[in-house]
Amino acid sequence: MDLQLTGKRALVTGASRGIGRAIAQLLADEGCALAICARGEEGLREAADRFRAGGTAVHASVVDVSDGDAVAGFVAEADAALGGLDVVVSNASAGGGLTGPEQWAASFQTDLLAFVRLAEAATEPLARSRGALIAVGTTSAADTSPPSGPGSYGALKAALLHHASALAHTLAPRGVRVNVVSPGPIEFPGGSWARRQEDKPDFYRSIRERIPVGRLGRPEEVAAAVAFLASPAAGFCVGSNLVVDGGFLTRVDF
Image (tube, rainbow, N blue to C red; front, side, top):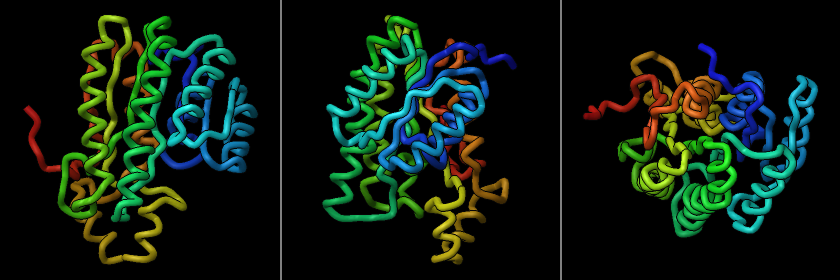
């Protein structure tokens, strides 16, 4: 399938590693120019250099997405540097696995409010290009059994789903499509599930056994879903939540 992404301009937050890196890589492979950010300068520089070596135009900035002014500034810089924005992907996350007031505050700022602010800053550029806004969620938003359980990560991602759906219906008349991709357990070197495999092998195996395909997912599989929703091929997808979990969730959606 030709996703018709050649020549598009894509912004991805948290793009130096893991799922965000895979999303940026696939969009670059599909012909997009990139604006990428991350908190860590070294990892961001390495990613940007790799993309440029492959022939991709890249604007890269060190940004903590919990800083609202920094997010708005990054969007404005990216819009100017790339000559517009066609795709915006909210990927950066505080992650899960921790509890307590500090983690709730971190999840609120990084998983929810960062998306709210990114959407606000990107609405006008995306309306000009009739583009796409995609948020990376999680199956933990719909599953209170382990590994999520009670905690900030799933709860705030559930709020993200609600806000994304409201945005989708509000912005569609302006030509902006808003959708969510919700990964299940995704494994990559240095990621949380790789650490759990080392630190909590019994727990890791119990989760793997819950997944009908018999393995955890790969970042590239999430990236493929994001690229589809970002593309004109998904032009009639508005307010969708595309779950990429190998059958991990057992709910039935009607």
